[in-house]
Image 1 (cartoon, chains in turn yellow, brown):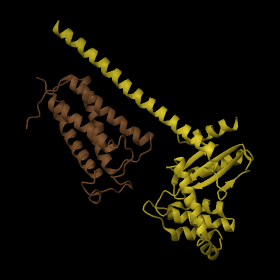
Image 2 (tube, rainbow over the protein chains, first blue to last red):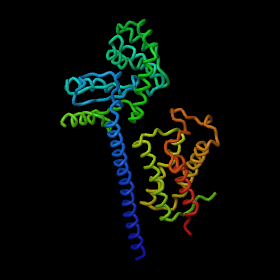
Image 3 (cartoon, rainbow over the protein chains, first blue to last red):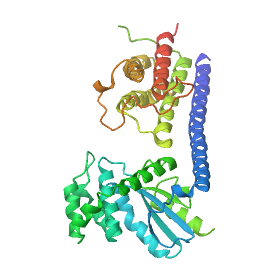
Image 4 (cartoon, one colour):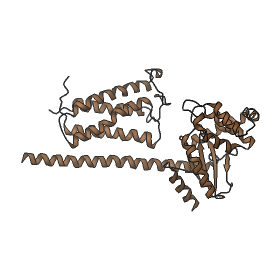
Length: 224
Length: 139
C-alpha cells in the first residue's frame, strides 16, 4: 500500500516537472516573440521617420530609384557570409530588374575593415566600385583576417583589376570618404545592424537570417 | 567533507527551476537580444547549463546522490560569478582577465534599476542554488 502511494507521488511529481518545463519553454518563446515584435515595430517607426538611415546620397545603389522594393544591405568586405551571399543577391537583382533597388551600406565590424572600406569607397571615383567589391570578396581569404587584414594583398587585388593605383592612393586622402564611412556606421547602429550582412527590405529587418527567408521577405513586399 | 547529503525533492525542484531559468535567460540574452557573451559569461554558462540537466534527471529518476554531483559545480560557478561581479564593480582591474573574444567583461549590456546587470543575475542564480543546496538537507 505504501509502495503504491509512493508511486502515485512519483507520477504526480513527473507531471509537475513536465508541466513546468513546458511553461518555461513557453515563456522563452513568448518573450522571443514579444521582443522580436517590439524590435520590428521600432525599426518600422524609425524607417517611417528617417528613411535616410537606409539610403544616403552617397550610398551605392544598383537598380532604379523608383523601384518597388528597396533592399538595403549592411556589409563588411571581410565578412565571409557577405561574400557567400553576394552571388545570390545579384541573382535576385537580375531576376527582378526594374523592380528592386539594392543599397549597399558599410558595417566595418572587423578590425581594419574601416581602412578597406575607405579603399573601396575611393574606387567609386574610377567607377570601379562594384568590380572592386566583387574582387575583394573573391580574394577574401588572401587578405581578410580576424585580427586585422593584410592590406597589401588587397592592394594587389585591386591593381590587378586595372585600377589607376596612383589615382586611388590620391583619392583615398580625401577626408570626405571617412565621413561617409562614419555616417554608415552611425546609421547602422541606429538600425541595430550589429551583424553582417544585415538586410532591410523596404525598411523591414530580416528577422530570421537565411537566404530563403530573405527571398520570402522580398517576395512579400513585391506582392504588395 | 561529507558529500552524502540527501536533498528533498521540493528543493531539487526549486533548484531545477532556478538553473533552467538561468539557462534559458542567458540564451535569450545571447541568441535573441544578440548580446555577445564575454569570456567570464562563458565560464558561468559552462557550469550553469549542465546543472539544469542534472537536477532534471534527478527529479525524473530520483536517488540520494544529487548533492554530490551538483554542489561542486555550483561552487565553481559561484566563484566565477563573484569574480565577475567584482570586475563589474571595479574592485578587480579588468586587465588581469583574459578577454580575447573582443567583448570586455566589464561591458554593461543591461542595467535594470541601476543594479541588476547580467553578471548580477548570474550571481543571484548561483547564490540561490548554493543556499538551496546548503540548507535543503532532508531532516
